[in-house]
Length: 383
Image (cartoon, rainbow, N blue to C red):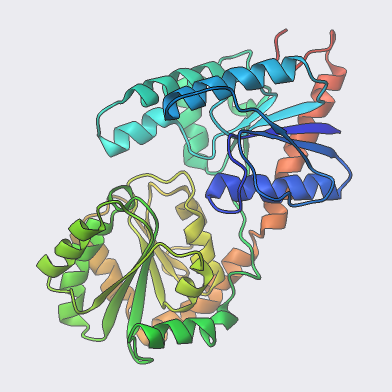
């Protein structure tokens, strides 16, 4: 098939970007003609993949978003793709993936000011999910599927659930004895100590402040507990002060932004992400794949995979007290050791190859439906 994968940015970092990269390679490997329609890109993941770069003149993020969406509409109208798969904020597609969930839900959970860019994103999303704008909507969690059905009236029979997948070689328990142990030594974490990892960018949404408060209580009960914080936030100093206020400045290590997430997981014993909203936090699966039980919130779509008490815990409404209780329950050496195998086993059921194959099956389904439609219909299901 001639397939267009549409997203403003192609890269090897970022959740949607990595999904795009892996899916493009999977489709090209099975013989499809794959074009990545984007504004910027890195090296192709397969030699037969081509790029269609659309860079309309735009000043500022809001204008870049809307001008790219218009450019995509013009490009698709002038092209002859069998299937167009939208992965971002555009409205011209046969299938669309809501990797970031519904924007209105994100805004509600964050409770901040609605900016001009947000209003434009909401308008694009409404247009992208209008009744005649798509054939299938791909979601990465049941909670996202239920949300899009409620907010946009998408019929359940047009929604396809494809959980995210994980690179099982990059994230592997065997790295805990090598690179993980080396990182622990470099930051002064002893072998006997229990390292709890928080990894993510945008600390407010990911719930770091709650975790810091909770860890203050945990540290008083478990002197050997240590907290590792990896990721990027423009106001990191605020969280360092919060660690001091919680009395854990000496027990917390702020590692900053890193490009070796697999080593961060390998250096830890337990993963915690009390996020306010994540349609599917890939870090959850990455932790499990490395053999770490995961504590996260019900507002993380990846929590749907966790086996309560066996491979982690899911918090219904995280606050400092509930996080502290979960940490105290899991910060036992014997329990962590027993859960490590269960965590890895769960992750092995969700390899990135399976996620790509399931996504490709949705595109095949769309292609068959288009081929059988009379008269022939192009992207956007205009009939």
